[in-house]
Length: 482
Image: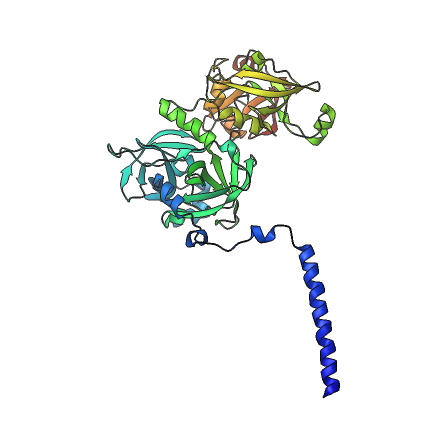
């Protein structure tokens, strides 16, 4: 027993020594002041963190929107399956029965004016014959469209809710947002009723989604689903950061990649609605391309970024400000830009009559140019003309593109040339698959610059025609043999 006791005693002393060494190592590795920075919550309020007070503040300004329209639906007839009848009547719906069907959709909106102006997405109300707005207190009102702007996918609705002012959200300067900021998304997903989700700002300045050249989206991981369109993206100070508009999804549900239209662009559209006119975007009068790594090296820049100017309209605001072909525009009003869409977005968030400052690099020297923001001019005159005769454009109606007309048609207001506005059914132009919106670039190797010049070219007695057109950003070449 004594030998066992001695053995145990030695083990005890060894263990004590090891514990002392370990304690010393832990003391050396512990950060200075750790005891002071870590503490248990001292009250119930410090434990119970919640977005509930913020939601109570902002949710009443978010509404549900229900739309209704009647569409014609053709029920196919079994006779259409008969090959003999199709030889005479084609594959149309000649034998089908036409029926009216009510098509309904839903979305969300945000009250931005206490007298009843509501901002939502244009795609929520596009084509609607009836629009109903349901408030958070369950009151419902018929709404009318005060302004619709497909290019920004924004629309402003007006309701008459009586003398009592409606709850509103204050617009935040969306340029103040930073990646990582907490946000809430509020809307009516899948029609289940008003729903709140939380997340962060995942990215800023996303210009790769959507078809508009004036949009620069806020990306968020707050869950956004169908029905959330037109709803609010709110920051922790209770202000509107953006209007939820789109998601990236393979299944139709949220994958944590949602997009919102920034509040600064919303503000410019709301300003137009309150002024009682359509959206008039400022015209810069210059165009260019993004500075890639290869271009940056050739221009002597230390990194890619900005827009190198390749085209300037004579006597435009850009021309009057002293902008030159070859200049690289790096920022607008101190905000960096990385591509032409970013430049157009920055200009679009300003109002006509204001000024903008461009940070420009020219021959290695940075300059600051002040540009007056003016409306796009309606020059040259449109000269809308239907074409006839023995040529491939017979049956097409064409017009001169001016900055104002391009804006009206939803095109880039830097486009010039001659555009096809209509195609007559059964015409030669239709048979060679020309479409309204095609821009004529050249005919038989000569540039098309105006309607009058095009008419002169078409008078030539040519048997073969080579036509170059721009369609959806692509250049197509057609060859028609007589």
